[in-house]
Length: 144
Image (tube, rainbow, N blue to C red; front, top):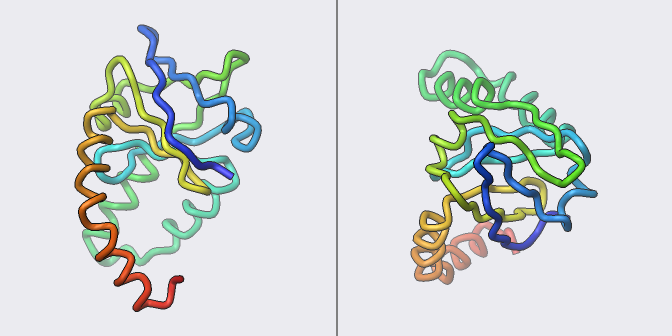
């Protein structure tokens, strides 16, 4: 299970260390793509296939759908976790997530998010103020 928050540095060759706790579950090859809220999404190959299959089956008639599918799939790249537990982040993904010297790596059960530390803290602080309201709405939907 991919859970927890970790701060890691990005070296001058754009390599980011994946938390050791995540490596066994992720396997050697992972997919990194543009995420929402200016972060990156990192998936196992099997989780990515599930998502990509769903995206590929969406109707093409709406501009918003085409745009979302393009951003997710065209923005994706497969990367290998090296022997030291690092992945290489392409420049275009670093730019998307505003990453430079460090990243917050967040486990969200079936995916990992990679955030600029300042953006993550700003998001977290904003979310904390709304978590009770969000929980009530999710409860109304019967999600817990």
